[in-house]
Length: 444
Ligand code: PFF
Image 1 (cartoon, rainbow, N blue to C red):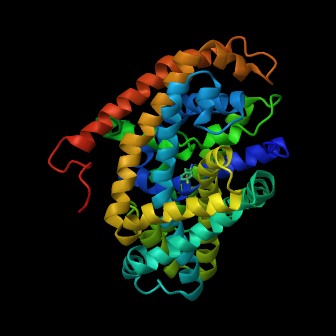
Image 2: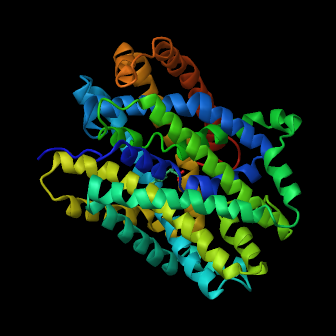
């Protein structure tokens, strides 16, 4: 059977933006910013996105478009069979992340309903406790998965491309509208200052603990290390300019993260809610209780969580596609069957996270501190040091040049990105393995 491709270049761009813009921007970015020192974190994050994230994104694009196969077999196609294990690690990392991502997707579904009925308005903390763990969370997780499987079952052009073409522009428009509305809230000046004016003293003092989070966040938000960008770019033609497409994706994704901060922090400050109520519940307890106190809170709640849901779905389908693409290339089962089987596997692995948020936090920590940096490291070492000039040649395709930028990219990848990720891994290892409450220990 002939392999599918994106119907249009915009189709690829929009799907990749849909993958990048997700819970990472709307749920994690505000609370990770708050728990890592506010604006100081934003600075580290922007640097990490630019010097580490962007070059690494292009590296994944090069693997995918050079080979036009799934993210594991791509390495064999390039003549390096042994490196397939790197593809395997990326797919496993993605599967791991999606298992708890779906659980949060389920919470979002619940919160759309809860906003419409005002169910959490009286006691936001208790409501979160009731719906975020246990049987209700399991059910919501299953529902979220069913929708995602439904889209992926239709394939690239008719499923993913068609869905994201509607989803992504609506996210952008609604986020802008919400940010404009949030600018009218009382106390907005303090909120902006908290989010956007860095205190360099604090920043440097905390650099050691903040940098790994900033780099991890850059990878997560750009969907790196999960084989997603390799898979999506494998459906791209040779006449697209990968650096231009990558630039558009990075800029749009960063803007949506900033917009999320411009919506979330004013809501918190307007309601005297401390922004550093850190942790996964921030959006669901702190922001949600903001809606309870605002005029038109129900409508705003539905719109806000509606956007979060769309963003989460367009990311989840990208990750599901990674697994389904591998299975489609390697088995004779139909795409819908394989999508369903993938959904079942995700449901099973996500059960601990749905049962208890302590597990969800544990899965998230392991992903951030271990799997993501390891997986990105392996793929950039491969592209930078093993593929080398071949990678530059592929990057040049469709650009009409890159005589200087090609080598600059290669050396950035070989040195800056590799060292940056190694440093991040080292610091992450301290959190994971050293100290009295080593994070690697599961919350049994
Ligand atoms: N870039 C996505 C985000 O920021 O939410 C990361 C992601 C996570 C994509 C999980 C896909 C996914 F299933």
